Image (cartoon, rainbow over all chains, first blue to last red):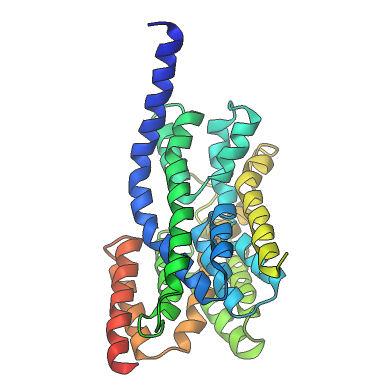
Length: 242
Length: 98
């Protein structure tokens, strides 16, 4: 066996190592992909638009926020800003993973950042922390199945969403607040979580009652973020590493 | 091209900027100001809360029951368990209180 053949089989096994690690993520995200497709159609998207949104944005929570605001007829620029705001956490993933993949060719890095989701970051960072190198082929094996299934299941959900007769009885109109509450509670270990949530909740409710629908999102979010910025840094647990 | 298409395209560009931007910015600075970092940490919970609180306030008993069960599940289960439990309670409760 030549050296080339050996390195090629190494590349293959790297890829399948990544694929194996992607399976729990594929399974866990499947219901949300189908749900996204169904809700997108329920909020006025076509099947093609639901498919395009999953293929181009590829960020579950931000897509849910986007279609929810779209359904409320919020101004387009505010929808885009909200998608940006929900995805803003990726800035931190990007800053973190950048050190691990800086040795890749630029085009591979560009693709790597496109599929940098929460689980992609978590699994890649864990591999780096265990002392193994994060290679492009392994990273692609981890991310590609999640991407392909996410996009395909979104389109499926959109097709079947049109067939659901009574969305109220199935609770489809209120599934998103439940999903978002789950996400909010998932962040509860973060410093300042309760004050930020309380400030955002209070401000968004007041804004909803006074200023009106689309603005309560921005006003509530700004209130929570400002509180975290204004409070002395030692409250927020930053500046020191755990 | 429809408005929806432009929203999706602009959303995709904005999202890609967040995914590549952290690396591009951080690789130029040695450290972030602690207050900026604290603000960044607060972003997801702050944004998502605004999508729950007003909706919860304007809802009825079936929705409240679902949210309470979701919150209780969060003490033990993951996101999937929370979501499924909340959704099950919602669908069940709506059969009775509409």
